[in-house]
Amino acid sequence: MSTPRTGDLPLHRLEVPFPHLLPFAVGSFDSIGPLSRANFPHRHAFYEIVHVTGGRGAHVLDYVHRPLEPPHLCVITPGQVHHWENTEELTGRVMLFNEDFLLSHPHDAVALDLLADRPWLRLRDPQDGIPDLLAEMEHEYQTLGAGYAGVLRAYLHILIARALRNREPGPERETAAPGRAAELGAAFIRLISSPGGTDSSVASCAKELGVSAGHLHALVKEATGQTPGRLIRHRQTLEAKRLLARTDLTIRQVARDTGFADPAYFCRFFRRETGLTPGDYRAAIGPGSSPQSGGIHHDPRIPSIAAAAKRTVG
Image (tube, rainbow, N blue to C red):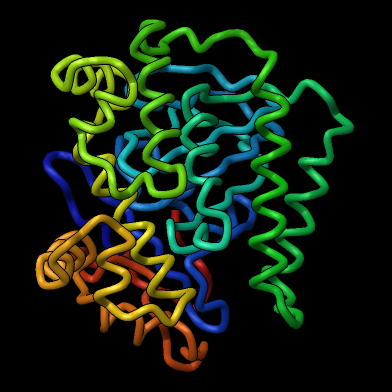
């Protein structure tokens, strides 16, 4: 297992070995591997959902220290910094997946951003079915029944919806961005995630939201840690991946539908963001690709955690 570094922090990549061949893994802390409880600050290039059912210690997310008080659920988004501190007898389940696993439900990425805004979601209702749902997902992942990939995606969609139900009435996160920044950041994410949103510019979004471009930049950066331009590029990349993987649109049409008038510029953009040309990406995971073809499960610009005989990712 390797942990390539980004700046001063290790960057963990998700690579799931055969026979799963999905940008997805779920299991206990032990079955996922030792990095699932890493005690040093690191970033992920993938999403992680952690359901803690027992244990002592603390979780540190974006340098905010939170004592464990099981049971609770935590969503960690790509780029966030986290680690476990002085944990003992940590139990529960860990789920790992990247953006490609969300292509059939693209709006789930927005929901995950909302859930990540309140780490360690307390599960108030023991009858909400989240523990049972996670157990079903692990069973599907282990048994590889017919159509298991679609079942896992559907279960993940349900899990996110149920987690949002737990979130809505809860108290505000103690480290949330100030009200106006959080409000504008959420409105901006909704805007660029709506149909046609990838065709937006920072200036057009600012006009739509009734603020200056400079004000939008400052408050979105405060609320999300990323600039509006970076978030737009992120959404454009995700939408391009979805169209390349799920449709037979030409590269020119995909460029047009993601806000690029010049297909050549789109190809340069996509390669810069993903490490692959649009054609190479489609050949790897688009229509007609098969599990035997291997697929792309990680950003080829960054070395991956080495796939071992058993899953050891985190």
